[in-house]
Structures are given as structure tokens and as C-alpha cells.
Image 1 (cartoon, helix red, strand yellow):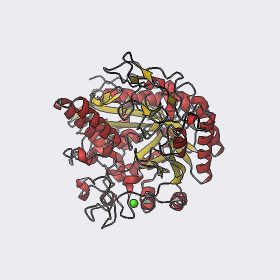
Image 2 (cartoon, helix red, strand yellow; image 1 turned 30 degrees about the horizontal axis):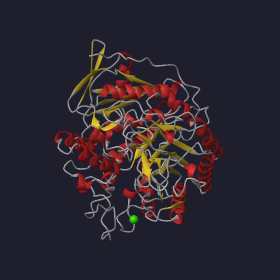
Image 3 (spheres, protein in one colour; image 1 turned 135 degrees about the horizontal axis):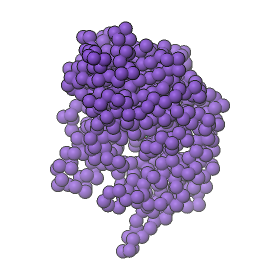
Image 4 (tube, helix red, strand yellow; image 1 turned 90 degrees about the vertical axis):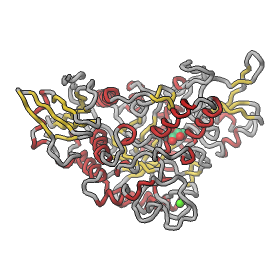
Length: 600
Ligand code: GLC
Ligand code: CA
């Protein structure tokens, strides 16, 4: 078995500037699903406030909330109709102020979700815009006349496909033009070419910073600059509609716009993370996060979460392999450290399914072991770490036998309608889509948090809620819930808590140290090394397969496996790990999903 490292470790990175947000861990809350305080079946801000001590006890530094601003909820708040007010579903401005204070009192910071690639179609700007062609707000959105095919049929201005199925163009009868919506029809794209839009966004940013917000997560921020002329997307699949993403991800004016935002953020020393789908080139993302660029602090890239579906087609499965994952991790880790950029490291969020189910095993026998394996794999990389609600106590995907009536996500619902319309008799294709919904569908991340086993609502809502939870609660709540995890010293929760503490006490190595992935081509074991400038090293080894696996440890790191270096807190088996040395060759034999961490 090959044990040599494919990539060479590089020189140290003294030029990486240190900063508070690089050393922070962010906890993401999906408010609709976190905790319902008033029994209306919808999570809310007072619910979050009631759990701040729990969040603090995990050891996170920053809390990011998915959108809680006024919204018709076509896409769960990612369609905002008033940027300066809280949606009554979640509470009011006073609740929001209390949340900020509650976080600040506990030494945590607060990050708001800024959704400004598009607004809701119910936003007054859009209502004005669609009212007439000469309305002063017309040019705040992207309007285009129809095209006509050879037979004189009206066709959209180009072939771009919406992320939520169908064309990105919606015909408006009233003014006889199309408007663009990369997401739902209720999410029209703002026209950033109009300086008034840019000013309005700057005003929103200042409004919240002045109210005590510590920074922003910026929704699909790399989509705000579209290529002039809006050319057709390249043809990659049969039919008229094509992704087109090459014409709107990282468009020509993106960095000018980000610099405008960055200037305000720096005035407040604010946190920022940009969501950047559709780009796999490290250099492209570096332009937005390079430490001397004056743009964003970091970005979410989609390389790993795109690993198990076809490019541009989320519902066409593609095999997940460990060497692919390791190649991606190595690429982003080394590139950002060597080039003065910074990574946001994450594997779960409200748009991704649960990682134990997706990449590992959620069988009760292995569930906690897998949660720990994935936790040490992620948390000891360089970058700012993001933990998503429920990830800390090993939440898994929705039950496999839940049919489509349990799904709520517009992405899945629209896709399923398209499948039934276009392929009504293709049972195999329908099954493939359903399998993929379960494997990577967003609803998996959105089931209500299981707080305890006190009643059939898992402590998520009041004992007698006026309305049932907006999404069904996972039936395994009696065994798997936050309270049980906190009580059990061997739970995933305490493993995460200790990892977060380790990142702090070993930050020279674990936050800022060099990174080297070992043995990338190995199918079963993922092992990497972190190196600090003063010679301290960390070695993380995990077996990602449900079988015993032996791995020849590269000579340079064999001495790291001396007993005194292996940290007992970060093992996921109580038995001793099998390590043998024979003729100068060190081999480690790992049980199914076993992980270890060594430092020294
Ligand atoms: C981002 C959000 C996602 C939303 C989309 C449109 O990808 O994370 O939840 O549907 O943008 O706003
Ligand atoms: Ca509520």
C-alpha cells in the first residue's frame, strides 16, 4: 500500500496575519427549526435566547442565524421583503436586540444573514419595479424583452436554469417583459449595475452594524455581478435549459462590489463570510478573501458538498470517494495558507444533509463514532470552523421511509413536479431522484432540534402546541437528543466541545500551522498533519470505512504515534489503538470508523 505523500509540505506561513475571526468557531442556527417558544410550530428568537447557555457551553465564539427578517417564506426567509425589520414568525426588534445582548453578555458575537443577490417579489422595491416600465425602481431588477423562435413563439432571453427548476426568467404579463430570478420566482435578482442598489445595500449593512450586529454571512454573494449581455450558458446536457453559472458566478464587477462592502466592514472590524457556489478554482475565491484585498474575510466554497452529484445537476448521483475528498481538502488548505487567503471550513449547514448519513454511517452502532471521526477531520483543519445546529450531537438524515409528504423544501418540491411532468412513466428515474433527495436534500438539515425526550415534541415546542411543528420531528428523539448528549461524557457533544477547546489551546498549530494531507490515493484512511512554525505537530488519522483497515504510517510521522502523543480525549474507541513496528515500518490498524489525534 502506498504510504508516501503525494504532495510535499511547504514552507511556513509567517505572512498569514492573525485575527480574532480566524481563531473563532461559528455556530449556525436555522431559526425555524431551533426552538419554538410560543407553540405556533415555528422556531423563534425567544426560543434561541432560551438556549444561549447551551450554545455557550459548546465553546463557540460566534452565532450566525439564517434569515429572520420579514419574508413571505417562499424560500425560508431567503426572500426578504423588508431588510430592516424582523419577521413576526420569529419575534420582533426587541427580541432581536435581546438576542444580541444575550450573546454579547456571554462573550459571543452575532452574525446576520445578508441576502442581497435578490429580494422577495413582495419587497416594495420589486412591487414598484414591476408596476410599469418607467417606474424609477424598474432598473433595480433585471428586466429583458422576450425573444421569439422561428415559429414566432415567445422564448426567454437566455437559456439559464433556475436553481429551483425551470428558467431563471419569469414573464410579467403586465409590463410584457421577463425578470430574472436565479432562485424561486419569488426571489427576483437585484440589479447591481444600478448604483442605487449598491447604495441601498450599503445602507442596510450600516443599519445592522449600528444596531450591534458583528458581521454578516452573505448569501450567494458571488452571483451579484452578471456578465453583460447575459450570454447563453454552455450546453452540458440535453434540452434548452443549461446552468449558465459561468456567466453569473464571479462576474466582472464582483470584486469592485465586494471592495465597496469591505470598506464598511473594516470600519467596524466586522466579521464576514461569503457563500460562493459554482466556483472550484482556488484563485478565483482568493480574489474575494485574500488578506490584502479589502473584500471578505473568508468564503464557503462548494467543492466538497458538490462531490456526490453530477456538475450542475444536484439530483444526478455521483460516487463519493475518499481520495476525491482528500484531494479537495489538500487543495484548499494548502492554497489559502500559502497565498494569504482564508477558508471557512464546514461540512454541514441548512442546505446540506447530515454528514454521518451522507459520508459515513448513521447505524446506532457507529453513529457516535462517525460523528467523532468527521468532527476531528473537520475541526483540526486550518480556517474558521462552522458547526451547524444538531451536528454537535450527531443528528442524522430524515428517516429513509419518510415519503415526499414530509418534505418542505421548494428545491425538492419544484424538482419533483418537473420530474412528474417530464418523466411520468420513468420509475427508475423517479426512484433515483427520491434517493438523492434523501441523501443530499436540504430538508435533512431542517428537522426540528431534538432537545430532550420529555414528550412527543422532543422538548422543541410547548407541551400543547397550538400548531404542530412545521416539519416533523425525527422519530429517534427519545435516544438521540441534545440533553442526552450533554449528560453523556462520551457523546459527540463533548467531543466537539473538547475539539473547540483544543483549537484554542493549540492555535499556532491547529489554526495557523501548515497543512499536509498524507497518502491521498489511499481509499480508506484520511490522515493529515499540521505543523506550527516552532516545530509542534498534530497528526489526525481516520478510517472512513466500516471495516478494519491497516495503514503504513509515513516514516517522517511514525514517532508521532508514540503513546504519549496520542490524545485520549479524541479517540472514538475505548480500546487501545493497534500500532505495530516491524523492521522500522510502523503500521496502524484501525477499527471501523476509528479516529485518533496525536500532538507533540
Ligand atoms: C443560498 C442559501 C439557500 C437559499 C439560496 C437562495 O444558497 O443558503 O438556503 O435557498 O441561497 O437565497
Ligand atoms: Ca414560534
